[in-house]
Amino acid sequence: MTTKTIKQVSEQLNMSAATIRYYDKLGLLPNLKRDKNGYRQFSEKDIHTLKMIQCFRATGMSIEDLIKIFSQDASDPIVSLEMRQKIISKQREKLLKQRKQIDDALAMVDYKLKRYAKLQKQHRS
Image: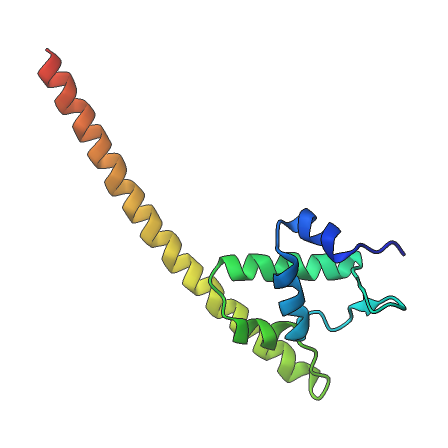
């Protein structure tokens, strides 16, 4: 199994090493291995997890929700899955609402651009 260093992962994901260390400290990378010197060794699965975290953070998901999703809770897997599904569904609804707001704003911008183009054309004639 090939692993990568924190520097390699940082460059690959365009994410600072400090941010990666922070996510690790929070327990968001529960299966992260370390070499004999204590350096983090990132597997493809760890990198995939970081990509998901990066994506969810870009959507505005809170650190608290990320911890609930990515931290391992083996006490009751069904409850854990249901809770994770609920958090992600809530985030999806938030994104759909944002999409509608953006679509509405784009429609208004497009309307104004067409209106201005029409006015310019009239003034040139």
